[in-house]
Every structure is written in C-alpha cells, then in structure tokens.
Image (cartoon, rainbow, N blue to C red; front, side, top):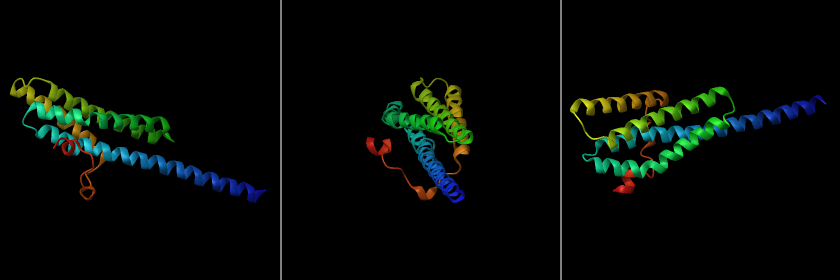
Length: 153
C-alpha cells in the first residue's frame, strides 16, 4: 500500500514537472518573439526614411504580432500557477504597449519636431520596459527566421 502510494506520488510529480517544463518552454518561445519585436522589428521600422516603407514593414509583421498576443493570452489562461500567469500577462501588456507606440508613430503626421520627439520618447520608454522585463539580448541567438525585412527585401 505504501509503495503504491509512493509510486503514484512519483508519477504525479513527474507529470506535474513535465507540465511546468512544457509551459516554460512555450513562454521562452514567446519571450524570444517579444525580443524580436523590441530589438529587430522596432529598429527596422524606425530606421526607414519614409513613412510608406515603415508602414509596409509594420503591416507585414501584423500576423506575427497577432500570434504573439494570442500565444501570451493562451499562456496566461494555461498558467499552472499565479506567478507564471502574471509573467505572461505582464509580457503581453508590454508587447502591446510597444506595438501601440510604434503604430501611433507611423500613422501620425510628422507634426512639429517636438511632437516627433515626444512620440519617439514613448517608443523608447516602451522598448526599455519590455527589454527590462526580458533581460539582455542574447547575441548568440542571431536573427530569427521570417522577419518582415527579409520578406520585404
């Protein structure tokens, strides 16, 4: 009886650990995608000299941005504990904040230099918050496949 209970407990613990590891792996994938948004996509969009070019890159990235949002939403709902749910929710909020700031910048008339600087300050702030949540960029990771710049080049 005791051995049966111990065996059941060990199997359950192993299964629970597998669930946590699978969820954590999904989160790492979403973190990689969020890092791409902050580091690569935003830089590509802001580096364009024309609004039309920036909008083309941004529009090409919309399906991927939507997928990131959906993945983080699913992670929040599937989270095995409150700390993991909070992490996914926080990351989703920060990605959305950056996406809104970039979208606002590229869809707004240039305006005065002060207005332009104010919009870019909002983007910089959103990028800093997201990067702080993600940690430093891993230089060994290299570029991720399927970036809009590759698709649009």
